[in-house]
Image (cartoon, rainbow, N blue to C red):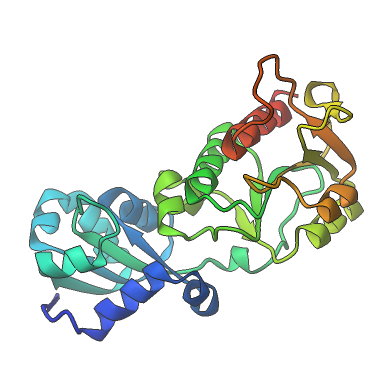
Length: 262
């Protein structure tokens, strides 16, 4: 493997740019991974790895994961600890990094099953929420997740919070939640807008025999009025305490559970 030592190396600079810029990730259809687990998950799930970077210590400590990553990566490089710190977005770097190509499944909502169960996130900003929802969605076995606006699915913090689920779950980025909801309605899928409003239908009272998509909105403002109006029903999660609303990822977890429970 080629050794990289200069901070000004173009491959290192390009990787950092992909890590830090959502705009660049969207334009180039690339994303950045850090850590033995995430990079190893990418290799095991046939993610297209364009470049991988390893410190000598990482090659020794995480030899099993490194072997899988190297076999799947188009280009492999050994880097210094100093370069690893430049690439790292965490406090304690493991010394393994990958630049990957976005899967074609995220180019559009083309694989929607009319009888499927889905969660749709509209303008969710916190990458920790996005990652947590994808983790719950995979764990409970729904058919996919739509992300419309807000934090992008390849935000490094979101990928870490997902614990690799974002690399395995069917996740589709869509520019407009309203248009997507209309498309789902046209396929006969029940679209449910989650809201704390008291005049909404209690989620436990909604039959979910066929296709269902639950929509969760922005952490501060909730679902936009346009998207709310496009949905089949407004639903609420019954709460017996004094809190007025739930965290976005918590609400999504309850909605996903209800979809699968029924």
